[in-house]
Image (cartoon, rainbow, N blue to C red; front, side, top):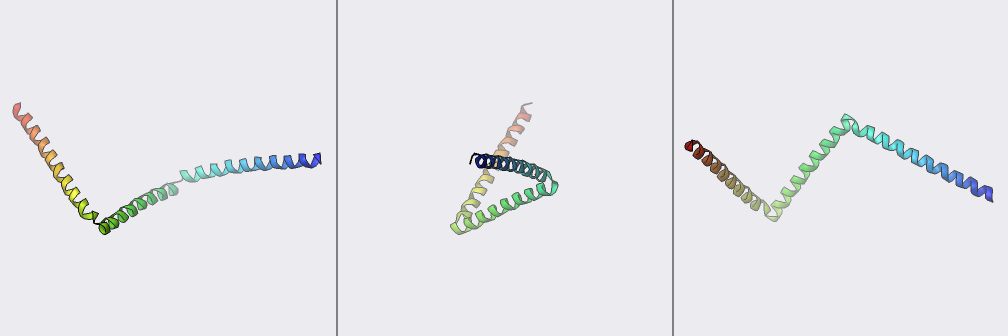
Length: 100
């Protein structure tokens, strides 16, 4: 009975070693693949498409919920504020030039 237990323990130990080796090898292969040009490009493309899909989805939901109008108003307001800031900065620079 003791011999059976020993061989079972050895088998378990070998299996653990084999599993850890396989994990390590898999990780190495994964890192090698991740560094390849095609994989990098694919990752970028997926990220871009995901962003576009999110933007489209938000656009559709905005139209459905009526937020599109609010968003347009906010954009116009932001543009007005931006123009005012630019004009103020230009006015300040002109005033500085006059002082000199």
